[in-house]
Length: 246
Image (cartoon, rainbow, N blue to C red; front, top):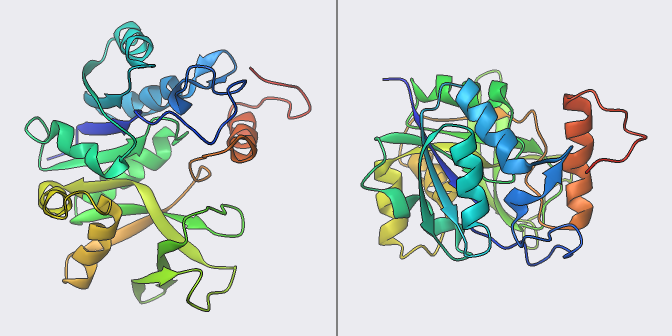
């Protein structure tokens, strides 16, 4: 069965960002060319065939996000959440199909990438996204490294502060497709780790897991990292990068 559901994590307040950029205390509502980032994600998901939207929100953005969802004519549910990303899919557990997408609300994932994840989910237990560390630096020190070769993909749990790892490496994280079994493992861990860790554990346990190379940059947490996302969106929408944007 083709995957039809997406969980969008849009409840974080973006505490590491300036209020001048993050004026609604919601990274998903930061605007590009006059539209909030979550608008672009919902639009891309619709074009990828997603019909069921499950969106975590906070008290600062709920009304705005629900207004956006209503204006886009989607079938959706919202739930209030805190800043623990690991908890988000569990908010909708009883409504979700066996397999579903998980994406951050400020992630500029395009339709092509979401479709690639969905396609791979037809033959794999879980699918994750691969990022090049040189162009997608992130503050996360503990991560899952991807080793890809002609014979297949191999995953390795690493700690940047403890392990000797070259800067030129590939790591994986959301967006990803997971299943209810992985979600159950997250719940049993008392949300101490995200689903991404149990995607890795699924692979070590013999499950069929694969990674799709990212088209977009990794999600942002700071103003400086948002500039990386903005440059990507400028290229995606053919905007002159010498001009400003909303």
